[in-house]
Image (cartoon, rainbow over all chains, first blue to last red; front, side):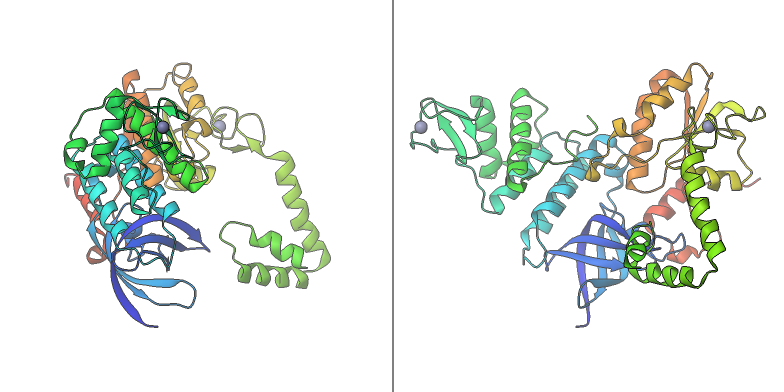
Length: 236
Length: 193
Ligand SMILES: [Zn+2]
Ligand SMILES: [Zn+2]
């Protein structure tokens, strides 16, 4: 028990009682943490907007038996460009929703904070359509759900890969085909996303194969979560 | 008794402790006071509905503001909830009409424009000759998303769209202001006469 410091990204907040909030955070060293911010809903709260979702903050927290309590907050970045652009904001919200849903408390996961921060910084710099699907695929791969993209998940052949199936966990050849059709261009794009060619993928303009990958990424995330992604496509 | 505590605990802003405190307070009330409260709740449920035009709370088809002929109908102030109208009215600074969205866009909760009274707002613009829409949603992520969405929707219609300024609470200390609030306050600064 005691005080500790953490850098974190605010994922979402839930009202608690009259003036408090429970803040869901993905931290740099402790994975996901849910903490109480007392009095944050009062106009004169010393936290101000620092604990709004989509803020990168440096925090001081006090360990509690159930939930920790936030005692200090300083902004590192409030991603103003994202906040003031509806397209970027709805993309960022999809990232926050995915992380909040996928990462469980108590899992000692250092990578997710870094991945999310990277994706948000990318969105801050450019409103690229592929940020969300690329992030979903990377996140799923990081969690151990890496789809097979080089050979047929049914028979192992590398020829004529034409379909993608979530239950089989990857691409399928013409004779094993089931699930969704995937174009050769979309498959190439997916391979590049999973292969670490992210920077060049993200600089590409919107394309048909981009839409294919986006649609597939949302379905894959929903399949993994066993529920629908609420924020995806809500404002488009 | 537990039923009452549970029901009260479901009210916004009432935790289990407060629910218990209210229950004990009610127990001490004389029977007629308790009846008065119960009747008031039922009456409000039976009589109060939402205004057909602006979706404010109302005891008739149109609310007190929509039936007031002195109000300027060319300006519409868009708010999230009826209680926001009460807040704006208290300033005595506004003489236009209102439109209550009955919520805000919240992607993370899956609340989109279709669940709000957006269509209804669009339907008012022409018949009422609206020339200005003031976006008076909350200065949080949902309120901002809602304001941006409406601005994008309404701008092409040639209507003046304004957003309430966000800034520092009067009586607060500058040194405690967060960067986002202070940044916006600086941006919305005005010339001192
Ligand atoms: Zn096969
Ligand atoms: Zn009305």
